[in-house]
Amino acid sequence: MSPNVRGALFALAAFAVFSTHDVIIKILGGTYSPIQVVFFSVLLSFPLATVMLMRDTTADTLIPRHPWWLALRTMAAVVTGVSAFYAFSVLPLAQTYAIIFASPLIITVLAIPVLGERVRLRRWIAVLVGLCGVLVVLRPGAEPLTLGHLAALAAALGGSVAAIVVRKIGAEERPVVMLLYPMVVNFVVMAALLPWVYEPMPIEHLGLLGIVALFAWTASRMIIVAYQSGEAAIIAPMQYSQILWASVYGFLFFDEIIDAPTAIGAGIIIASGLYIVLRESRTDASENTPVLRSRSRPETGTTPRVSLIMRARGKTPPR
Image (cartoon, rainbow, N blue to C red; front, side):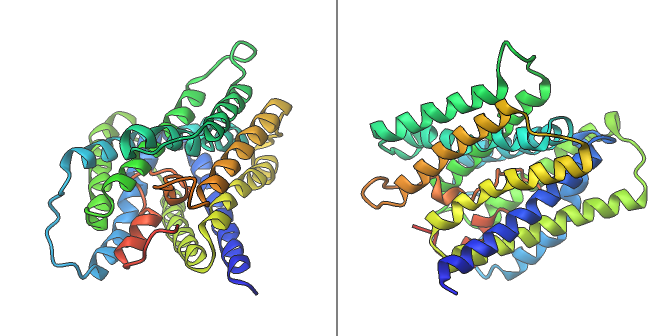
């Protein structure tokens, strides 16, 4: 088996696990506020983050070197966590994925002011085409835009901001610092809001949240193996397999069927995202490769981010 095939298989398995993780979020979101779901997700992820901290041998403090950039990343992660969990709970899975898949397009645009990236005409066209795909999914005027649609857009934007900040300061800031601050702030903010939305949670639902944390950790580890095995240009597009899992899970558990606008819009978004990834894989097309290094999952501040785990283990980002 070639390294690229091995990496692709690990990535496909990882995104299958992530999709199962999102199904549990959707099930719990039908009963509990996203604030409560995020709170317990962060709480149950702290032991996993502690393991990462224990394995970090860097002799340094947890004081950030770039406090303002870290503050921006933290705020973006908090917004993304609540928004993504809410979107999954109220929108069809496939529609939520289709909107969040716009993240590579947003990262490409943000890379211009933040990273000094030069985006040439072809990539601009890909971005515009992808945004047209988002409009096809949202179909403004034909269907009423709900808070769920706005939440999915907020998750895509927040995740993109968090990813681009990692790309900006990741070489100088300790991974555990970039990991812990969003988790702690998420925990504090959700704890402050929890009394207004709390619903008693039976032990089996707490167990499901424990599975959410375990699935996120397992899938993250599998993606690390995928990136260590294959080329980033091969691994990154594997995230789009989630639309297939959304079709299966949506039909089996929620009686959801992908309608034509969602399918067409998702196809447009995926095609534009694939084009940007393939363009970035060429060394003469992108200096910073911000999309390839975003690691495919939006930053929620609830579980360790893949790129931060790789940096903590001394692995270089994929080129």
